[in-house]
Length: 140
Image (cartoon, rainbow, N blue to C red):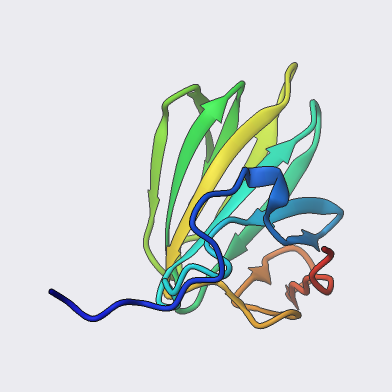
């Protein structure tokens, strides 16, 4: 038998995960307390008309899975349509953003290494204004 990995929980709902905020957008940190320290995953809902501005991750390779809704993804200078079950592969350094159109856009964002380190530091650099993104403290 293999070595057991310490976990804070075994079964929970997404809404029971710790929550952080980035640019006014709530993110549920679904891997928190799992022992999967080398990966990040957030459950995010963008309300209709809401946008996560174009940005880059200097270290993190991201993968986004659209769970519900439709919208657009910005990748290296152009917008492309996305919808339920679209998958988006984003290597480090690739400028990207998300925009919900007429309905909310619900996604899982996976990253290796995690783009959020601890409670407030993030590997998120917004193109507009050349600024580093910050996240709020975890809410419980």
